[in-house]
Image (cartoon, rainbow, N blue to C red):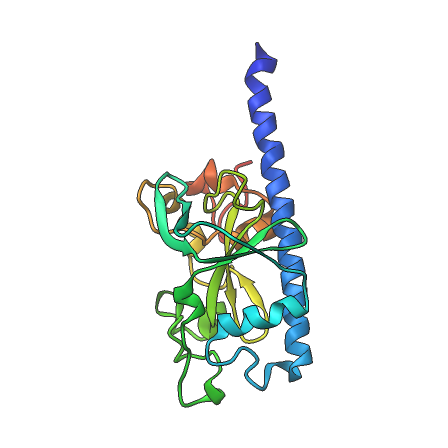
Length: 232
């Protein structure tokens, strides 16, 4: 009886570890390619990504990492952790060498950044300021836009934020996992992420990469960058 009770837990833990590994591998592949683009484009000084940063990024990226566009029906969505769909619609999806899919929607791809300073680079005048994004020192202060990474591909479940779908921000010289320790308390509200209907999704990427667990699924009220790093 004990084995029968523990087997599902063991399978779940193994599956979770596989997803965490896939996230880290995919992140490393994308980050290395992104930093090489910046290096080749004069260190980012010359506004690497252009007026529409995510579209510019998508045009450059295939020259540095193998991408295979995946054709999908219109209006594929990801699920919230507590159930239900969210508003991020998948318009374009590309398979990476790791098997993950990097996905974009047209709203982000067609977003224009501007401002009279810094040669129209992604800056404080960007329309992609995260939650107001006006705090200098915040990773997203220079955010150019965001995209999601489905680490095991859309054809494999659960297609759910914080489980196999993770958010990244494009900045002027790299990609940044959402929810970094110095970016406020977005990853300290795991209990909000898990509530039905919550829009607090996609902010646990850095937590998984740094702490190598998804314990916010089990003990969200215990965790935080200034609290425990796991349920144990």
